[in-house]
Length: 130
Length: 130
DNA sequence: TATGGGGCTTCCAGCTACTGGAAGGTCAAC
DNA sequence: GTTGACCTTCCAGTAGCTGGAAGCCCCATA
Image: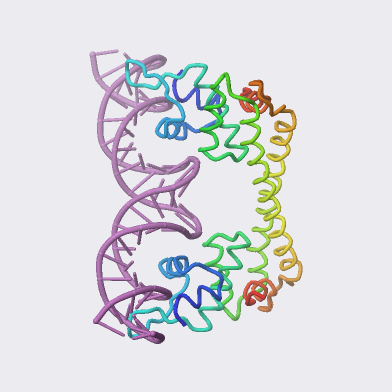
């Protein structure tokens, strides 16, 4: 499988896949002409990466998860720990964004949004922290 | 006011303030000794930046907002538009994270997390996209 | 057999928004 | 006069790609 096909099937840009090889997340074989030759296992890993990245795991998390994935003898508790920590982080991010949203929502709601220069958004943003 | 004091009062690291000068968000005066000399207006702008960044506005958003802020004749609708777009983006991000959270939450919940190697998290992440 | 177009290769640079660190100047206190 | 905190500039690095240039390779069509 060439990079174009595996990119298509894994749902990742070819550039990204080359980058993943660069940082040694994958090690595809090479054809005689120098083209990367991806096997089913590579495709599987890339799909894994694509999904894990979409779920917001960092590259280093992915590296750890891939290692666990390839290790037949690892305990599922190791995986659960990484995923659980990540879940907590997602929860924190959601809470942060929610509070941003609330603050900004208040400001936007109070702004007339007309031709006049008076604007509570800027006033609100400019207030010295209390 | 030296950089240390203004950093303290605006709630930003000194490094970040130097960076903001670098990219021309602020233009503090200089003392005879080469030290940056911040006035109340600089402090005000930095506080504005600190809050706007905390609300997730990009630097370029901030630049636009600062320009609007300094423009006495701008219409509040301009500001409301920028803030409103940003609000939509926050909403999109929250929705994304929420769906990540749900997916990952399911995977974590289904994982025994014991010493056995069987783990639905890795299986779930490895599944070819449907 | 020539040619054209797409896909592949490497390498280098740039993006966002900082952050760390080195090397050195300045200032106030003791 | 010397310590130590604070300031300066400059260079490099972070994450995770992304864009572009220059140049092979492969296949189909004329």
